[in-house]
Image (cartoon, one colour):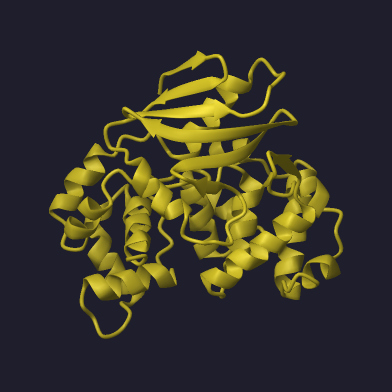
Length: 301
């Protein structure tokens, strides 16, 4: 994507298949969300660029994202880095035309996809955050998962207060790697989840695992590496590949939300089996992640 810079405003041009309002609907799905804020049609996001805290106010105008930097920045590379972060966060560099074409003939997607046209997979650019959120979300409802994340971030994350409002960064693996399991149990994490998260933090903090390392692998190698982490199973691995590593073919096929959405779309009296989902998704080749994301969004109606 192209971007031009005027003083403290970054302009990011957008693909035709983009709808900011649809993205905001997803971003406001929980009142407990602490990693960004949406107020009066503006999206606020605190980003760490080379150890400098950059507070962004994002809006939409004439098919361009306007990113206002609300504080003076000193790093000369900030504008470029912020634009790159937002492009990744909103998956702006992906061409979705083929996805929209295949959805027209699909018995499940032909109604779901047009209803959310322009919605992008809202990613989690930070690998540690993506892995931690995947672990937090295992076998609990979304409301409790968001509550745990909020406690985790506000207890161990870095923050910035601007004009009376506090904005948060996700805790760094360096900080979490030095915790004791009891620190997370005190926040109502299970012992197993606390152990998993601290172990993952140590693996990243000591350089054994990086996002760049994963991106250099093919899909099978990437999956195997993620599965080698304690606490990361098939669902979590596919979730991280979908939300952080940008594999549009990632497919958390056993996801309960996906099953519930398909149950409704197919008008079934029970959740579909994995084999039935494999059959239904035969036409989704290469876009399983997007099909899943749109089906998840359909549950919000």
